[in-house]
Length: 417
Image (tube, rainbow, N blue to C red; front, side, top):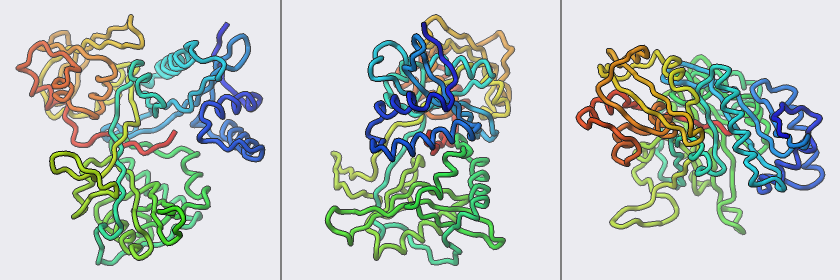
């Protein structure tokens, strides 16, 4: 007998055992650390309304756990509710029993029944979630830039340390950026608490003439070479700014540290970021034939799935599909739920998506994983077509459909969950 139930503090010992063994590299196994972890989890269970803990019980024994998140995300300029799945873990003695699959199915059905068609996760195994119908989001780029190569800033700036008492100003800044940035999500309690909860964090901000924070950076100092205390790096944990002038000021602050700091390590989903630097090479000295020099490393992370395509279009009725005027039928398959083959006919009229049409001029066959990436602007329609990841029955409509789904900003996600 299997049953998925909401967890409470009475399950903390079993929850801790499962998560510690599922993610051992993240955990400190000392008795003091385990007790501190339990205390933190109980605090989240009791006080964080954005996170819910669930467990899979088999014959009344807890064999798998997960956290479900209620997020708010900017989707093409409108803040909408979306769901997140995190910390999915299976007991070591119950592997290969499709426990993770059962949990994932519960997650999708739970939020679909609540009318939330968007699901997000950060994959431990991308291949597993790809098979379950999740499509790749925007890649993360990590730069390791010599501090001396960061652009200097010579104008006036008011960069100073942000005190914890000004957390509300910092959050106001973050929320303003969320409202302007497709894919970005408002911070949940765990993220907010972590800013000043880590004693190693340094938080600096840019202030405008009215004393408001219009950009900030959260960073840590790291040793750059074992055995040599004089080699320091700065690892940027968060870099948030309201406009390009503020970005220049924050980068200028980093440049001023060149006498003490060897490298600045920075993660960004901005694929154009290397244009900021006269010399964007990292410290790897890697060379790719013919004549290409490594600037950054890339990684896949955030993955998306639409649980209900029709509902997703309806929720994003505000989106303008580039003034397109074309009718298209999508035949969408789901490798997770093989019995589901969804037919959706969209009439694009002056850029608006209308769902009640019966007529179409072209048909696209596509898996829900790729469609989810396409819908959110992670990849172009032509990009999918060129890779053979969608089938279009009439090639003459390729350019028109590609223009309809074109998005000038890929979704940005810096939320850790």
